[in-house]
Length: 439
Ligand SMILES: *Cc1c(COP(=O)(O)O)cnc(C)c1O
Image (cartoon, rainbow, N blue to C red):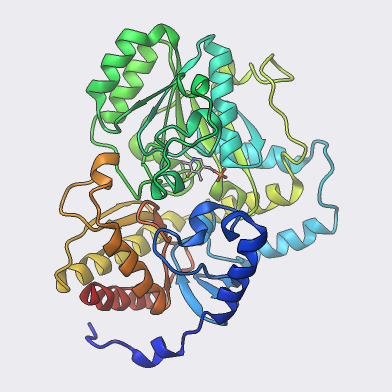
């Protein structure tokens, strides 16, 4: 490993145009951004304004290039602007951008999704992960006739009211896991429990099952970094929910087509009653989906009485990007290649930390990962919060200056794509070693 900082490269970097744009944006968009974590608040400094992206690289408006491990927060598993997705989109756009009527594309994407997720008999397309979880919970409530839901501390399921209780992602980053504006009367129907604690779950379910409609979780918690389920936790969850007629919802918006083709449910061998998807299935366009068993999904209007709708749902461009992305992912050997890249990166980052004598914990599930600055094992929200966020902030800035783009918060997962090369990974390892040393 090279033990010298590339001062030339570091001096060259300028963020002048980004700074100017950010200043302007702050006057006319709340916080200057359209989603909170983008603002770099947790790490100090100004967000980069992006001009374009291709493959594993993202380019800012000042002309700097970065190896990108944010990947639009997960969707770009093929890398940015994949030729097959781009050319299909070009063709699709000529045919019009929205019809508000059924298309064969929706049927095709639904078929691809159901084939990959045999726990689902039917699936409904929506426009975001938030919509997917919100709708799935409504359906679970309609199906069971019960009001309460159980979620886990640090799990983020989008920003619907009842789900912004002890939520991860930006909510954790900014210390507002319980957002103002959520009526107490909503929040009181949300029971929050520590992740990986089957005992606490059992106690609550045995006491209150008559009022509990569903348990929703991220099977791998990507919104406080990357927290893996302990052996036995998911199966305990499955057993308990089945016993008491509670709908088990896997929020696989992040993990779907990410930790494996069939998501965390395939990876861990657990069949939920309902599944939420998003991110990867839109191939970079706004898509979410929720689905599940036939008897549950037949509750959804117009087949059943539970209402859920969307002007742009099943949008032809979004469906096209999703179809092309999944088709590439379904090719033989793709997930072996993804696993190889991810394990290469894991080894390189662990080695960099060890050589630089940095105290860190690294976790990975498929192509999502996180480095925490702690000596504790990270198994839940409380242990994730032991990570030294000021060290993370320095790490983030040091990496950015060396041309590596990580998520600007400790409590977010990193992602690697099919487009990342061994050279990208080597560059990342070198930058990590230097940055670990520096802090
Ligand atoms: C990103 C995410 C969501 C929200 O999706 P949006 O498209 O941002 O609304 C929900 N659940 C999980 C697990 C996510 O990672």
